[in-house]
Each structure stands twice: as C-alpha cells, then as structure tokens.
Amino acid sequence: MIIFYLLTCCCLFGAQDGGYVEYGLATYYADEFHGRKTASGEVYNKYDFTCAHRKLPFGTILKVTNLRNKKSVIVRVNDRGPWVKGRIIDLSYSAAKAIDIIPEGTVRVKIEVVK
Image 1 (cartoon, rainbow, N blue to C red):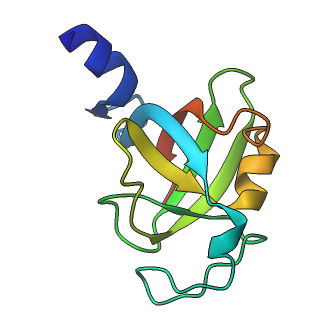
Image 2 (cartoon, rainbow, N blue to C red):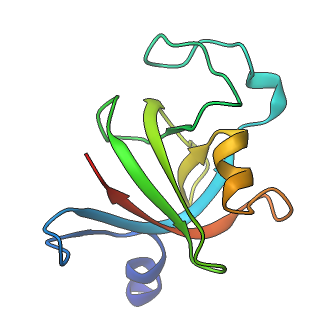
C-alpha cells in the first residue's frame, strides 16, 4: 500500500533539476465554473492555461505531462483544489485539451515547477 501511494500521489523533492515534482491524477474544471472567481480572486477562464493546486503558491508556473501520451502543457496556479481524494491538480479546459485529458476525464500526470 505504501509503495502504491508513493507511485501515485507523492511529492518528490530533489529531482534531477533540483525542483518540485509530483505524480498523481489530474482532472479538469467543468464548464459551469467558467466565469466564476477562483481562490486567488481571478475569474476562471476555461480558455486560459491555468490550474488549481492544494498548496503551491498562486502564480507558480508548472509543466504538466500526461504520462499516457507524454504530451505536456505549461500552466499557472491561480486556484485551490482539487478536493477529491487522489487527485493532485485541476486543469483548465484548454490545458486539459492540450494534453488529451478531455476524453478520459482523469489521467495520471507528472507535475514539475518551472518557475
């Protein structure tokens, strides 16, 4: 069980580039959130490349890689969440579409802090 947790939802520090790396499940915002305020005070726009993360500071730039197809996207943290157990990031619609999450709804990803 511990190994499963480490492989699916752990945070790894001291990666090759010395940055923050996290593995787990990603999902994306439902259309009903378009136009609503985020935790940062910004209005959520499904066409922007943004995301929600539980603890990384607002404004943090992340590279999110779909581990199934190796497609990546750059996003900016502007909200908090996801609040569903086992999920580590909520992506905007456009970001999710860029890495082909839309058909599945959730997918395993790698998150790396860029800036």
